[in-house]
Amino acid sequence: MTASSIAARLRESEARFRALTTATSDVVYRMSPDWREMRQLDGRGFIVDTDSPSIAWIDEYLLPEDQAAILAVIQEAVDSKGVFQLEHRVRRADGSVGWTFSRAVPILDASGEIMEWFGAATDVSARHEAEEHLRLVVNALNHRVKNNLATVQAIAAQTFRNADDLVQAEAAFVGRIEALALATDFLTGAKGPHPSMRLVLEEAVRSHRPTPERCRLAGPDINLLPKTAQAVSLAIHELATNALKHGAWSAPHGEVAVDWSSVRGDRGERRLRLTWSERGGPPVSPPVRRGFGSRLIEQGLAQELKGQVRLVFDPTGLACLVDAPLA
Image (tube, rainbow, N blue to C red; front, side, top):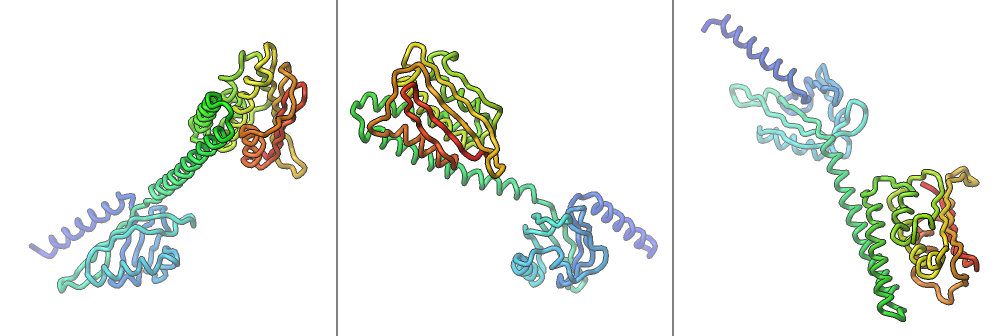
């Protein structure tokens, strides 16, 4: 084989190599034998290019808290003349932090010594973001499941502790568990990520109102956070149950009106004003003993909304007044 044919083959081989590195979407780079100098890097828009040899690549591309661990893996590959392979964080071209899967192989001379390293790095930031989101979702789900179990325990204890009639207590317990199941749909996003106030109210009163005409809902379009929707749903269930058993809906022509609005507070923040009012039912008097339902409404809803909730036992009909910040 002549020198010219050898040179031609080398040129062809180099051309194929350049075509391969140009075609790939991965970052490609070359490093000195000891990795102290980055000889070249094509960042593909993911990280900044290095066109000329640089010894500052460690600080330019790697986060300070990650450098020691990454350099330890590099040193292990240098000592063994093996493959460097690691998934790690990197500074992206836009200044943000991303993740890359980097792999480099040593190029050896005839005596087996390393002449340089050739590597490629893949942007895996999207996968890491998806995994982090999944971890957050699982943690949130665990928290919500524990909260729901604690809520069921509290409902059972409060419902049966001072029950005078076991049959009625059982019915109340079943109703509250069903209401909790309905409210959980709002918490898990089954009714949308930000359910409307009207949807929450309609779902909570639908099975209690004698006819649609005897429950008037009036207010603007307001979207709620899932936890807020759950708390409102549970509270409205208690009010609707009481209205059906003892209040306006227990009478032939009694009615319930629910009005809500979004107003500006003294500091310019949006606030929710909601009023549940009953008319046409039996005369109302303050209860001798506050039950679980009353505490759930006044204390539980107030705590969740970080506002004020008040029950007014007016002789003409029960009213519930809510004033709270609106997220």
